[in-house]
Structures are given as structure tokens and as C-alpha cells.
Length: 311
Image (cartoon, rainbow, N blue to C red; front, side):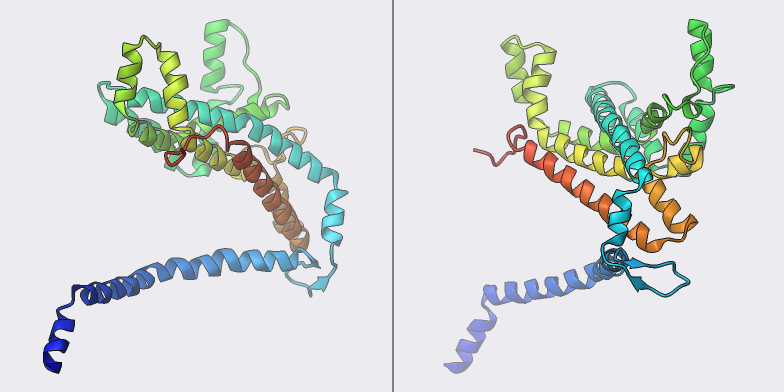
């Protein structure tokens, strides 16, 4: 009888499922462990270290001395802090809507049934995986005021000399925004994936009711992809506040401090002036600014974003 009971327990499918689940769990932790180790070693660890150094006077080659909140007090009395923050906010205010509109427009064009669709999708996405330094040099040539292709077209079409782009204080930020044309591929591909998931029955029903293309876009497309719009908006906002490579390669913060972005100022403080404690305080202020703006976006979007699980 006892042997029969043990035999029946071994035949129990639930026990087999449990053993299989435990085996899968072991493999899960085994394969994900490199990412977890890297996350704590290269992200959480440096964040905790920078938080500690933000309360110290630290210059790498000298001893660490605790200064409390002095770095943060000095930062809020620093004119360059406000200048770099203003330039970064101005850039983000232009770059986020620009990348969103261009990305969504390209995604809608590439979602249509056109000949060579695969080629155009690759053509518009490929520049987004090119190195930032290479893209910066490419745009330096495109927007060069003497021999750049953009000013040549302006002169040939309108007969006037184009702007200085990166050398003019009034056009340097729009020039950096224009550079987003080669980085909008990631935004476009996410919008494209969401557009392909939309039910065609809704558009067919709206067309039968006589809804115009604009009305179908406004009343069907935008509400249905509103979570993706929010996601791309948050990602674009974070990327805008972290702009650095373009300013470092192209303008070095000029002209007239109009491309002196916050991360460029942070880099200069850390690696040119060797003030690691002060740079750590700058990094944490940047983190709090991005966190506050992201929280604000998520809060304001609660009533305008449509989720499938909403009743």
C-alpha cells in the first residue's frame, strides 16, 4: 500500500510541474546574474559613491574631506549653474517636441503600404545607431556656413546667405535640435510598432461614417497610441537633459555660452577642474531635475493617456 502511494506521488503531474518550475527558476537566476552583478557594480555602486562624494571636497589625488552641504550651497550661488540649466531647458523644450513629431510623422508614412517599405524603414532607422561623434562631425559639415550643403541650397534657392548655425548664438540651439534628425530612428521604430497593432476595424467603421483622415488620426490614432507617446516623451526628455557629445565635439560650450549644456559643465568640473565632489553634487541635482520632470509628466498625463485596462 505504502509503495503504491509513493508510486502515485511520483506520477503526480503537479510535482513534475513544481520540479520543472524550480529548474527554470535556477536557470533564470543563472542567466540574469551577469546583468544583476553589472547593475550593482556599475550603476548602484557609483550612484552611492557619488552621493557620498557630493558631501565632500574630493580631487582624486588628495584626501577626502567632509564639507556637508557646502557643494550644494556653492552650486546654487554659481552663475554657470543657472546658465547651463537654462541652455539645457531651452534645448529640451525644442528637441522633445521636434523628435516626437518627426518620429511620429515618419512612422505614419512608413506604416502605409508603399513600394520599397523595408528599404525606407532601414534608411531612416540606420543613422540612429551611428556613433555620436561621427554624427557630430557629419553635421559640422552639413551646417558649415561656408561650404555646408544646407547653406548652399539656401543660397541657390533664395539667393541669400544662410546663418552661421553653430557659430551664431541665436541659431546654435536650433542647430543641435536639427541634429535630432539622425537620432530619431529609435522613436520612429517604437511609434511604428504601436501603429501596426491598431485594429483596422475602427478605421473602417470611421471611414464608413464619413470621418476625415485628420479626424481619424485625432480621435482614433492619438488616443490608442497615447501610452507610447508618453513613453517616447519621457525617453526624449531624459535624453535631452543628458546631451553632451555634440557640444563637446562641435562647439565646446560656445558661442557666448549658448551651448553650455548642464552635462558639459559637469564634465568640465570633474575632468578639467578635477573637482569630483562638486561634480557629484551637480550630478545629483541633474538626477532630481529629471526625476521631478518625469514625475510631473506622468502626473499630468493621467487623464489624457488611454490604457487598455482602463474601464
